[in-house]
Length: 349
Image 1 (spheres, one colour):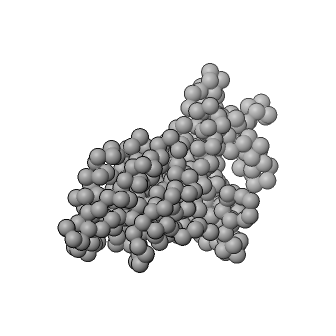
Image 2 (cartoon, rainbow, N blue to C red):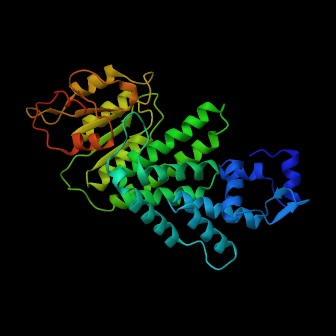
Image 3 (cartoon, helix red, strand yellow):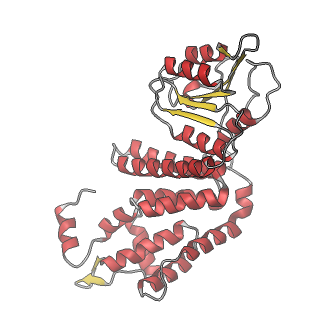
């Protein structure tokens, strides 16, 4: 963050201004004033009795307030805990975050079960609160809180739900802020993406310690040539590993000849091709892979081709499976396939 001369002067003197602190925490100045008025979370120092100056202790107290409210604790209770922590009577406790999540689930569980309300892209209940908390932590560049919230989401909901209802909405929100602010939030998007990737890798590494059946061929995951976005494939990679499905992850921008060579060498039951945008979608390549036969002479077969990502559109054509989300992709890949190779996937609901 680039500091102005005034900000540098404020920091070097008795504290930071309300505007500076609001930007650091990812909240509005009005929110800070409201917390001061309602809950007594005000600055220790006021210059000339009027201008707020927030000391490092004040900042730590408000960071704790942000963390607890992001985890779902009611603001009044979070304020009491933040003030007590600032006074040294209690430490910032993982138990408080656990209690906050329990409180949020108890108060909003019925709404969560209803799923996403018509006409919106946001989840409901405690999951929406988790998305907001994750986004706010990223905006204030609080890497520890981002990782803590991501780990808690996977532990609470499982990987698939955490990906679809917490990680993806939060990634979209920080991406929206980046696109609408003239690249001002690129550091926020990078921070969020890195920690999401680290969380997915941790799940994969944990699951990969269990040996798959020796005779099983791996599912092959790859981005099409020119495609560098891998997070969704990383999520699928981790989810398949959790289910003890062997996976071969090739990652970003795999050349056509490398894809074809891998299919012939490995003989995968399914190949997942990811395209984030229409400019990278390569239907001729997908159709060529769908027609490629492998195996011993007289018993050759073909891989199921699964097209992931918005780049492919909704109707890629016969012989290509087109899941709409992670859970559907898992079902198409792991369910026994009694259909003739090359048939179309069921219509999405």
